[in-house]
Image 1 (cartoon, rainbow, N blue to C red):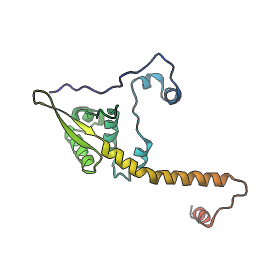
Image 2 (cartoon, rainbow, N blue to C red):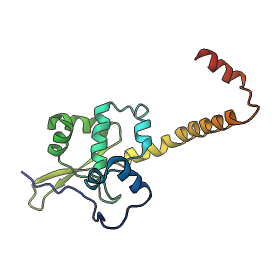
Image 3 (cartoon, rainbow, N blue to C red):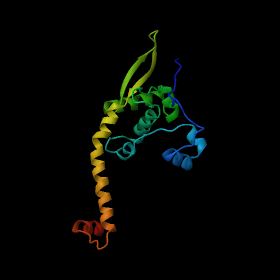
Image 4 (tube, rainbow, N blue to C red):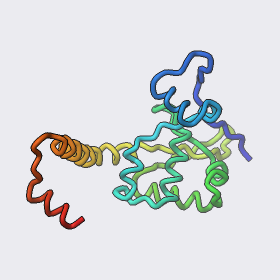
Length: 172
């Protein structure tokens, strides 16, 4: 049995007033909820779920791993037991899902050992996921920019839809 140290933010200032996005999060979720912590996950991970071939449980496992990843240089190392409890899965199921993510090249397990040679929880390298998201970003950016340009064009006075736009309207 090993004692797991969960990664937490090194400093969580509570006395200074919150600014910008933090303030918006506090207003949206509530101060007490936000004081328990938050996880920064790029929206692209959620938007690209299908392109990454992630089923809902695989995505949930990735999101859990992201919740333990606070610093770029310090990879997350939650135990299978912790992930199992959080996801309501058996430890063996967690192991299988992580193996699937590893097979897809999104996660790499790194075995950890205690100084006495005993096993510790694995460390999880998410650089494969980061690289895949960076590779997908241009596709999503292009669609976003095209959509933005189309909205801007529609808002202009005297807008006349093109033949393609008319065909899309007719099929809708």
